[in-house]
Amino acid sequence: MRPVIRLLASPAFAFGLLASAQTQAQNAYITNLGSNTVSVIDTKTNTVIATIPVGSEPRGVAASPDGSRVYVTNRNSNNASVIAAASNSVIATIGGLGNSPQGVAVSPNGSKVYVTNLNSNTVSVIDATTNTFADSARSLPRRVRAPA
Image 1 (cartoon, helix red, strand yellow):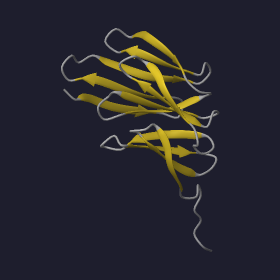
Image 2: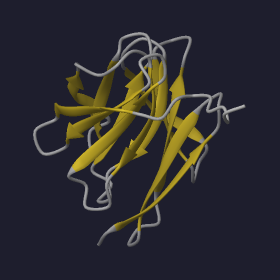
Image 3: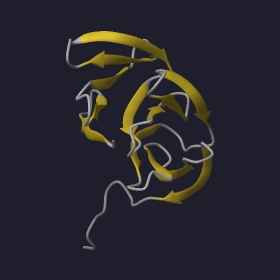
Image 4: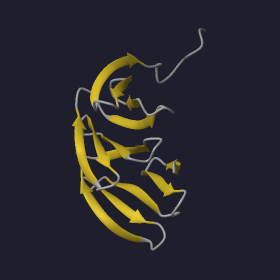
């Protein structure tokens, strides 16, 4: 059965909840900026079931639509980590992103992952089938001023 996925985010941390419709078991993936890790919490028991080393200063978290992969942006490493949800281990590290990756989102069909890069003002596109950098696009300016 398809998992039920809910994503929650705040400026301090972000996490995704993965729940199997059959078992209703849920895990939360929490970024730990100071230790460069992601904690996996079983939300039924409120216990940490895994701690996964990722890149420097992890920020954003998003899950694939089928719940099999979790994508984490690493701000100071300028890359993203791909976590296999079944094993709670990093299966790929994707470089080539812009400067200071922050937010992350997965396309509804799971084929693309989009990453916002704060300091380069770009959006990077990751090919989720190959876990490689695919493209980059300039995003809108941070401040837009009306003409005087």
